Length: 246
Figure 1 (tube, rainbow, N blue to C red):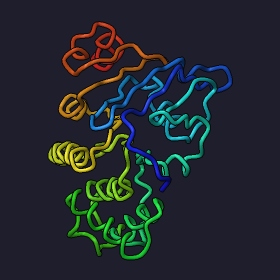
Figure 2 (figure 1 turned 45 degrees about the vertical axis):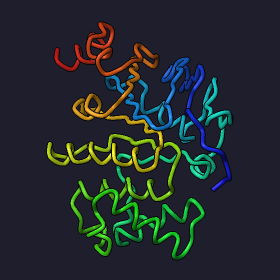
Figure 3 (figure 1 turned 120 degrees about the horizontal axis):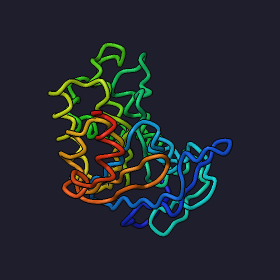
């Protein structure tokens, strides 16, 4: 991993992502402080997934900048961004089914420059933190969805990131699994001191563990605030909760 000093914030400034003239993301300013869990929410088509992908280097910016602390990382490749210390998960987990859980997580550690015994120790520590160390020797094809999602997060955690981007980690989980996962995300933040950007449709997770919430609609930011502020924000109620429950 590149040698960098700890950074205080991951941020975007007037980020735009246009697809054939469609403004998927339009002049969005986002801040993810280190050591805090920030939720990114909005109705379907709001642009949150596109913003998430832009921050992590998976889609190009049309305009604006992404900063990792003072470092402008706009236009960097996903691999280079991850090596710097900004690591993401995916909705489909991208677990290799024919490898063991430990081997999958080791790949994450190796991606950050660790090799051999160091990679295995980082993987083991990450699995312990995620509560799935007992599955280390199981083939990934044989584990339940909830455990597979934890293993996918462990693979990112094994890199010891400064910022961890989680893409709908509770998708497909039952209520008990979701509650357990919420506690695990807090434990990761506490253990690593990292900033977490959480894209999630389950509002019990968002309002349960996020210190700050960023709300998008139609590609633009419509509200930023604490959970209490977002709950009562008229624009959010109309754009997100109003549509969801209409």
